[in-house]
Image (tube, rainbow, N blue to C red; front, side, top):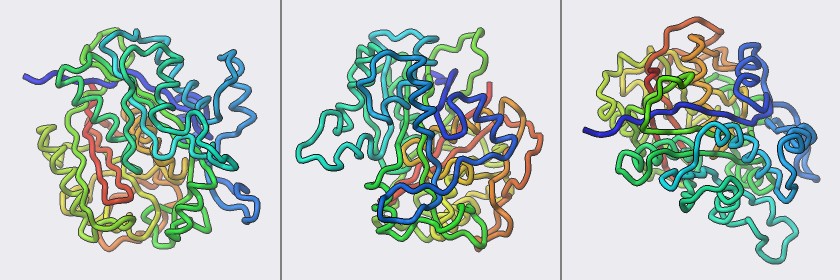
Length: 377
């Protein structure tokens, strides 16, 4: 019999707050971190969700003496500190870092590769600071990285490689990231509107998030969520465009549901990817309908946080668990009129709900897709 794996703690740093409770209260009030920002000198301001650097430094200085860290590393340290203080690190504790670009901004105006630019060295720097004893694991698979990092932790603990794991995910807005999305003509000119008829593209965001995952269920934990199933499938459709028939996401959800051993009708809530691009939202609608999930309440967090790349899947998983703990569904911000060919049950306002089973999905460049099923214990 396979071990049961639980998420029993989490934290985050976002434009809406530097802890989960601040974020949850902001979401209840409908607040969004998305605003106009001038990020590239020779370009006009555009909509994005950015952590206030002054507030970040102020909070960091309250908690840490060492200043030899990049802006992104400071966000990582603040997210992880709350968990490390409450859960012991042992020789059998995994440290998993999820990110797409890490410290890519260090490359600007550099003739040589600076220290910390490689994802492995970034992970090692964070691990060394907190005293992790095992070699860090890096998960960097485009925008499914955050969801996949949960799955990697679960599967490695079940395989007996580790007893528990700290999973951390994060990305920051940089000129490199913006230029990349601009090259795909994916950046929206307005505040993003996932699944809406008038959506016109992505708002980039930044955040860090962290979760503690363990095989040991302790009665004194404030909460726990069992990771029932997971799956990641690549549809190999296109370097940036998702499968028009939703094959990869459909297969990911199907496999995760089979492992979870629950029917689709038992799912109470879907935390979807919802980037507000024409092709992604349409693909998701097709995949959800193929799985007969079109009537399940669904939202996207991108209208609040923007697309946080490697952090998005982990951050949105945390918010979905908060929804379950507070028995409240958060609306998919900025949605007004259906813009997909197949129906979805988009949440339009805060509403009470009993949430036991959660489906979290993610999709990304290169045809990657991932899904996990969580159960509130």
